Image (tube, rainbow, N blue to C red; front, top):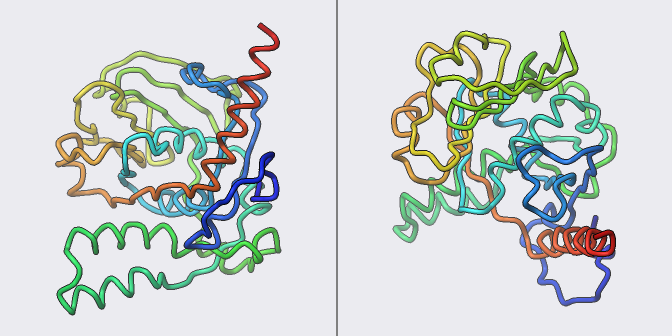
Length: 270
């Protein structure tokens, strides 16, 4: 979806980056479990940043995805699961190319002149790690250079464990032996019993205060957490951290349009 897909004409500020100008909307055949409190739980909104983060996180053994509260960090886990199952979506929607991030370069220069701060530069660096594999919109949907895609190919697990604090988990068998999704309750220590190096654990802290459990676990781990370092202080010593950028105003308006339509449809059927 792009600006011309808005149902009502509104004045949308010009985006800072070209990849803020569009949004991919995917309607799933059924609602996402545990997300029924929102008007459209069967929809996934995928921004170019999400595709880039999928590649960045998929190339790390252990990583942390953080960002402002309410920025849809938890929803990224469902997008990750979808893209592992439907890898053809990456070829269809996202040709990639490596490029330097000018914002981060400028931040480095500001730091040399004393204008920047260490915190600002660190945040720019995390955003740069995610954005440097993006291409501008006029290049998307063209056939990507296969050698470059092969170099950027992320790890694709046989098993995905989407867990809440390591106690309640959904098991997705990406490469068999079953298409069923299993729901299990267990202790954090049990994760090592049914995961291995060909698995990915998507860690969601939920409302608890437990730190990310990683000791003796050979699986890949992606933890989506708030900036509160008390929840991942020790894990950060072994993990790469990425920062989820905020959506653009246009992307928010497009999401709101879908939510509004879904809410109206529910109202008329109630």
